[in-house]
Image (tube, rainbow, N blue to C red; front, top):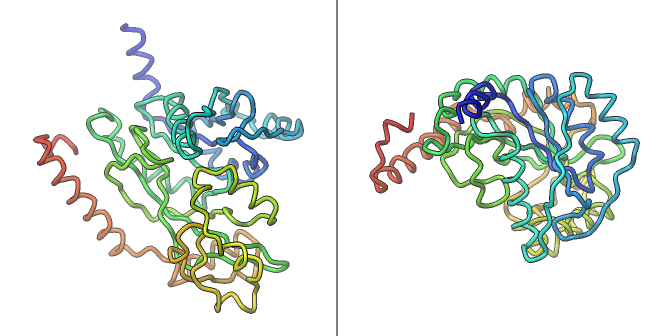
Amino acid sequence: MINIVLIQCIDMKKIQVGFLMSYDYEKLKNSIPPVYEESDKIYLALDEKQRTWKGNRFEIDDSFIEWLKTFDVDNKIEIYRDNFYLPELTTLQNDTRERHMLSQKMGLGNWLIQIDADEFFIDFRKFVETLKKYDHFLTNPKKQPVQIAGFLINIYKYLDEGLLYVNQPTKVMLATNYPNYKNARNSKERVIYTDNILLHECLSRTEEELKFKFENWGHSAELNSEFFDKWKKANATNFDTIKDVFYLDPSIWKELGHFPTQNLNDIKNHIKSSDDLKLSRSFLRKKNFGQWFKFLKIFKRSKINFESYF
């Protein structure tokens, strides 16, 4: 028992990053490099029979495995194979279950970061610096569960020149100290909002690829029936006339913006200078005070000493 405790202490407070490896595995070539240097370990969760959450099978080209071996110069990446598909569960339930199993593999006492294959960080080093400010939450995760959130710039559609994006960042749960997930990455514990930004290639695919994604996705039953018509006709000249474009509840994404380039550095500069995409300090303070106050009341009702939460 003593040896186990010692090993757990040695392994604590690491930056553990997990990705789900599925039919869109090629996108990992974009999402892994931005986090590689600052990560202590990277896990790729892959179903042992290469099935989606709906049970459909997919193949992984040998060239991708060769790319992983070549890229992983510090031997940080591990493919974690397990049974991530149970036919009696819904796609969303399988999604949540896989994320929980992946985080258990990464180990309590560490920052457990989960990034989807179609998300990539603008500045992962900055995010790691943010996490380290909250390392005290790693001492007793079960009694101090938190989620660290950032924001996504959702890429709506690639064009021949440039791309369309959703003109309002959306929150995303990125890290937790205690992975008691209730709904995909959301554990419904207290959220600490940060100004860290990721680009999200959720819809930047062909129509065929999008249909496959939605059929095998955790929210497949909730798809907005008007989504594809709007997505197909959107372009650089009419994007400002197309409204309510989210693939579930349409009103969540109210309008589109346009980047005249696909160059990542140019896009970063555009984000920094755009009033619509900025995350002000007052906005974050308001969000975080709301979370603090909400969980203050919860702890009081639960007769938990709130001071021990910090």
